Length: 110
Image (cartoon, rainbow, N blue to C red; front, side, top):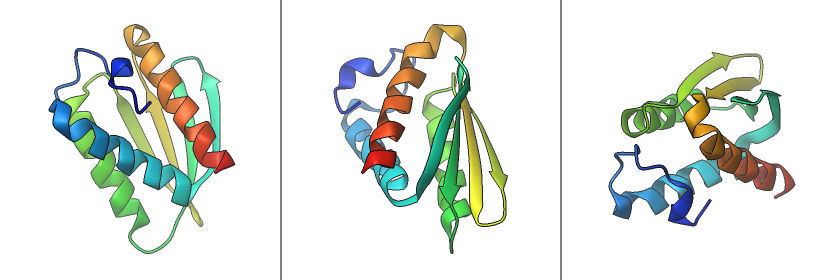
């Protein structure tokens, strides 16, 4: 996912900011990712460990991501010690979700 080739043309985030955004997702995954699953081909379900400020951090990140990549639909669900994050895309952007899912797998292993 560090290769910019996976980023679709419809992303409006300036090219120079993309590595910073990827780093934010990587940090979230490496610090907070408890589990990831793919209940449907176009949906990724994450469970993130909670803590002070984590829900706000997640909501801020997904709001900014939604602003530049309108093909994403994010649903956050606060819970007891875990924050659920569902990420969905339309059929044209399945490969983007595949790349994000691969990134989460690295976060779970790391």
